[in-house]
Image (cartoon, rainbow, N blue to C red; front, side, top):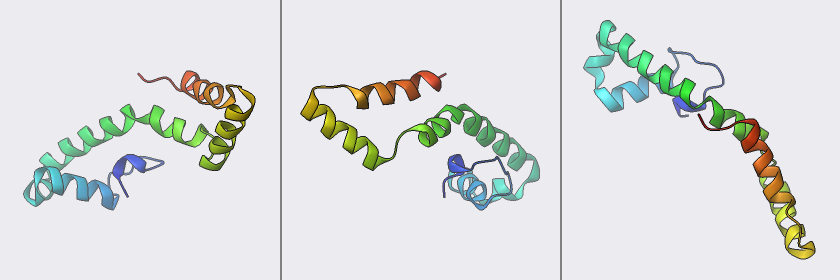
Length: 94
């Protein structure tokens, strides 16, 4: 699991440990001061990607999107594009 995929920020989550160790090394994780700084950086990154998590939950399922695309091709409509644009309008990139 990626630390960005957490529903609620938890600094003690194993994915946060894995991210700190892979980016900065075990010594930085063991140093409480450095760890706190790295956790703050990761939390800021996590907050900056809130729109992405919201979008992911709001998009129709892959099956529904494929169904929309097939119907659009058959009928000459744009329901898939409209559905995706509605989600992007509701959760814009910062």
